[in-house]
Image (cartoon, rainbow, N blue to C red; front, side, top):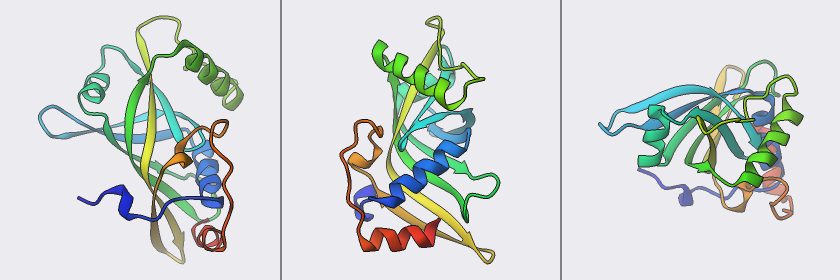
Length: 182
């Protein structure tokens, strides 16, 4: 299996373009490893903060039990409607429960700002868990004249929330790649 560090690092406008695509969509498919070795794929609603994704799951769910046993996940997000030629993204990521009360409140505010009519990220009891998905590898998929093209990138600080990420400079290669992808 290939490791994320063999791909070029993501930077500049590509980060912003993928973050915009993530902010435009609401659903993702997540592949989780079950104890018997078979993958479990589920569709869940999510919000993003930069390239990080967040979703809610039941505390008694098989999904949470599987994530606690093996935090490695695969994500697929399909762009609906016109997203400037983007078809979607796939990710290799690690998932972890958000337990810090201040972070939960920040996510509640982010959820309300992103989707004011939806309040699923406002857990009022201990019956749900908020899961953070932090990508290590992102593959952006674009389409042009009926053909798809995939560009994969490894992530470092780029996956941090926008409020915490250090400023990045755009270089000509990233701008050129951005033009091809989106």
